[in-house]
Length: 398
Ligand SMILES: NC(=O)c1ccc[n+]([C@@H]2O[C@H](COP(=O)([O-])OP(=O)(O)OC[C@H]3O[C@@H](n4cnc5c(N)ncnc54)[C@H](O)[C@@H]3O)[C@@H](O)[C@H]2O)c1
Image (cartoon, rainbow, N blue to C red; front, top):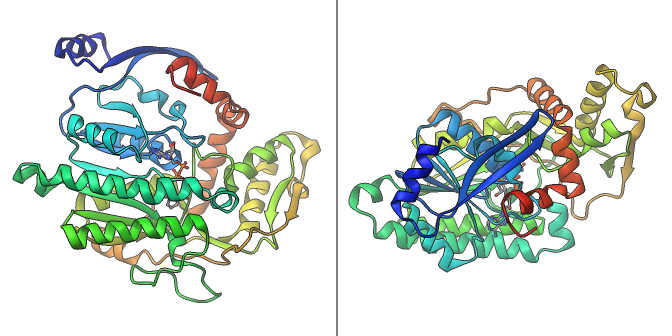
């Protein structure tokens, strides 16, 4: 953003605006710029919760490329939130970061009042099944209580909007296919009317949040939309999840852990395709409806790991690591591991004209290249260094 915008901001006399300077040292050199924390007026931005996470940051980057409106990114910056993902737009006048917790009701209210968003796209969640098995407290707190707070405050905010604003407002809740439980071999994919049967604490917390969203539409008329999507992969995914973990470990010659017999099946979708689907639902979805999103790409975990290994072999890096498949180790299965997920995405295709652009092959090529080209991002994330980076450059608590 140019200096002009900043001068204008100062002239508004917005007390809570806190400008800051940042320097980002990256593989492509060092960038410096100015950003801001706090509040300044934007014309009907959307409010994105969890925008510093994997899908949220891809969504914001795509939004600013494809849409004209602004974005407020409201994020607590847990271990999964990384503002480095958004460094390229940190000074864009259409983007603003607000550091906060969705469970903090007073602050959520203040943010809605200040920014007057035309829509909320709610990504913020604890998202890793394994972590929910280890300790579910944060999943209950953020995914259930946090969604409740967002709904309550959105309802109050929406009720007080003028007629045109009320008509336009949407609350889009981003959810998962895991709420539907596990499929047997040959069973048809989950559709929007499949009964919920969540099996992990993560899935149960997301199912509870979906039900709350449904109830706020049914009872209060809040204009909600819900999307349930299959497994995503792509740039900026935290390397605790299967695909980035496998790429990162294969590159370093570390073991490639595969749960159980490796035959659990997931339906994989490139993250940019998911973001496009969310934009389609936000602009054309029917209020109160749910849309299932998937890639029609069922793969076993073992197939995923083997795909990464073959790609790494072709890249002809360190010959000592060939074939990368020899790094695969089978580890004790995850407790209650769902066997198969598959999505029937025919409703969103039929009604909103959405279809994924990437095939599994093209999406995986892009993903592997991104991780190999962004070694510094990987090193920072895996070493926890990015938290120091944020504390230095954004003056945030690590
Ligand atoms: N990753 C997938 O494959 C997938 C698939 C379908 C649906 N989803 C859903 O999409 C959403 C985003 O998933 P993701 O993979 O990007 O998750 P992620 O874990 O990468 O990011 C979550 C983000 O939410 C933020 N956050 C967490 N708790 C918060 C709180 N209390 N207040 C404010 N911000 C908070 C984190 O800091 C982080 O930036 C989640 O709701 C998830 O359930 C994910």
